[in-house]
Length: 249
Image 1 (cartoon, rainbow, N blue to C red):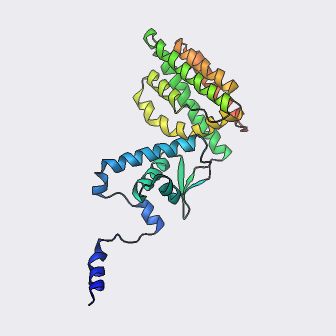
Image 2: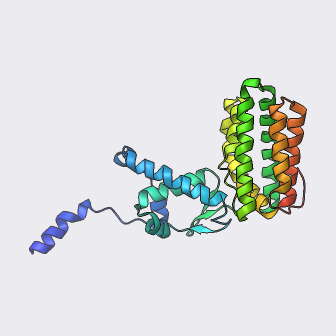
Image 3: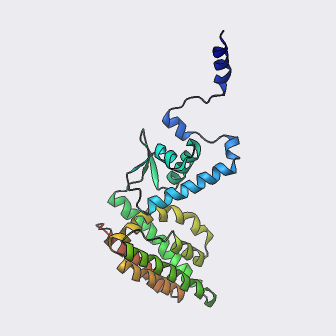
């Protein structure tokens, strides 16, 4: 036996077995990988980047996210990239298509209307709870969220680009509502619809929605439950109109 052959045989067991693309994407991290905090900080960071790109329209519905492009752009290994992709699939923002990897989720008009029906129910209830929990001590937070939203809308008006809200209104609303159980059912529905909400702001230049968002914030700040629910419904109806959807919630 030659020295080269002997060396190859000794090294072969340490090399990972070749997997198909489907098997590789579905495999769970090893216990050693799960204990690597640096790896999972990379995974979480990249998942956040992907979410932002989906929500701001960089990745369009139906578009494939290619692992090779992410490896080239970020210099990460396959593991963190696949785990980050799995995170956005779990969020409902993307889906796995057989033999085509991960694609941004595409919704039919009917599916989108049904999702907005759920969104409206959550938004109305959160607005009602937030209005009921109104107090003078929370007045500063109401002013602050209006300043932040105003700045984001001004940037949108000035650049014609994506409104940089980053879920801030949802965070404020959920905090004001004070219902922990609501948090658990909120994120997935709201993230899925936020792609289209942001698109509606860009399409309609945000003018009517901007006023309706302020109506919602003001109603909550005033502790007016009926007005808060009315503003939530009006805002949702305007978003559907701006998206050009046929139907109502």
